Image (cartoon, rainbow, N blue to C red):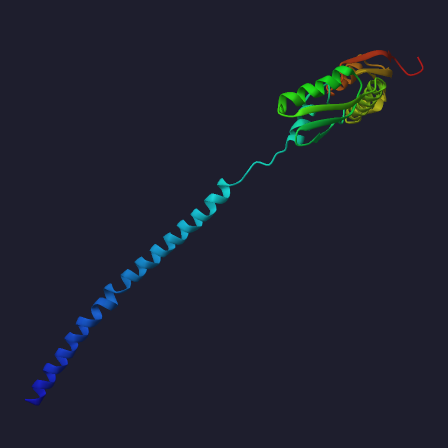
Amino acid sequence: MKFFITIIGIIAVFHLNQKFTWPFSVSGPAPVVHIHKTQAQLSSKMETDTNAPASESAKIVQSPNLTLKLAFMADTRLFPYDIECHIQEKTIELKGVVSREEEKALASLITANLISEKDIINNIEVQPALSAKIQGTSDSRLTDLVKQRFANSQTLRETNFEVVTLRGVVSLKGHTRFQVIVLEAAQAAREVPGVIAVNTQNVRLGAEHE
């Protein structure tokens, strides 16, 4: 009889264990996994929301002073000059040196078109001699660029042409036996921005002492 009661007790304990451990061992962990996934999604969303305003709040940085200087540089007539802009609450003062009255007036016109709500004080000086100085600097630069192109060609490097530039016109001087080399030199000089013509009249065909 005792043996029979013992067996029944063991079976009852077994069923009780099955009843209480089943939800925790099999189905219990599922909600925990689900909660972790939800937290990860919320974290991702928070990061996205945090980053979004940063990109949306990025602002373009600019100033009237820089806008004016860029406008002066964009005009071929004012490009050679360094014009300063001093912007106050109600006025804009222009300072610098140009070579003609037309260029001084042009600086005022560009300023008025860009910033119309301020009075313009044009203190730009006009020095006619400045034009020749600027042109001389430009011609010297063009000569250097043409010589650089000649140096990149073995043929033209050996001919050693003399290069002189005056008001954008490049003149070549020297000698060569082949006219096709003269053409190559003229084409190389022509490709330099700012050159308006190439003069080869002083290039002699033949040997150096012929």
